[in-house]
Length: 305
Length: 278
Image (cartoon, rainbow over all chains, first blue to last red):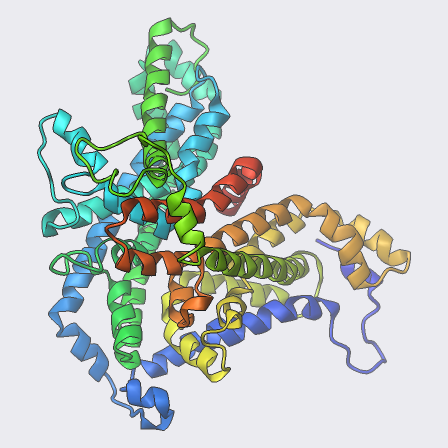
């Protein structure tokens, strides 16, 4: 591929010299090893100790406890609830977000649309906003009495849902907010995907008398399927790391209905300082993410070809 | 739906524009309401039917936030952290990305593959030992503890590498023939060539740092050092009833990134499409 080596007369005869490439990657590599790889490996060990508040003062107080953290967490009803909540958020929220993305992408990509870039910018704007800030905004939009949402729903005969105060509605409310916040990102990917579909396919289908909906169903969707599938999985994996929305909007309530795995981990680790237990939760989260990744590898339409 | 050459009647076009308008309204309403409520007098936003436009617009909440609640300090903290992070991570990741694309050294591709595999590991796994490490380094409650751990970004290196692969080797070799050292080649040839991707990376880094919440929340314990999102999350605990005040706080937090986005849209868009479609 490259002749970069030609001009760098390497070491022959001279003493050992470090290739310049290493100097260029060294800062990044050192940082990644010290602040990511190292901690990940240490996390394995940490999850097998009873590291707690006392150990925080004196690390020698931590003892090896084998799998006790894992068995303790797995026997904790709150863990299972957090897992259910997290899966609920990811499995419902992921596809919903991508559906909104696809809808927006189809609109922006429509040839008859004027002000394309303005529309695209408006749809993308929520994505760049600060999550904490807009989560607070949505807290008020969801207010049962004064909130804009219930007021609008009132016009179509739906009456005062206590969005964030009712355990049945709190997670749907968070999903809706996350969909609003994130659809713009995948929309851009979908637009790129749509533009990669050869125009001749649509023209041929149209010549055969296919309606716009039939063309969408039989041309757009199959052509876009690999992209959509990939995007759904990536979005779901991101959603498995739900934290800020419940932290700001519900503190994990009501009745723990919005406590996610990461929020649970945060509480164990950084509120109660049970770092060993929290590390075990982190690895259980990792296991869930790995499972999603494997499903993606196995089922990917691209891989099946 | 998407493009045909068929002549179209006016009706689908009207439906299309109506749909875009509805979708656009849904995207903007929360932000517009935030802005509008921030100018309302205290208590006005808690009324039924909801107030949409401030009756007598006031700046009192902004004055309150910058005066009594010292939000200006948090904005400065946020800006400082975001700017320092952006500049340093740009230097670190562009050098690495370029080297992985264009310089030959033993173990390069193996190292790169191993690193890329790390993308699959969620950051939360590293977080707990990382906290202990940062604590051991004495960087808890210190901006260094917020900034340094995230400086090297595997994603950023990836992005730069993809872009740098397109630099013609002849260009680099010609400079070397003229006696330029590797650092010189990087500075005067590579960096100008990959400028677009650097702009994208800078924007995304700034945005991610400005918006970041969980890590600063963990590291910063002294409230004078809070970033805007951390301060805002704390504020909502005490002032949840002051809707208008909270909305002004949200505006201050969101406005810088929205303005940045408005002016530099192109780079955001390129970042997404380059990062995903390989």
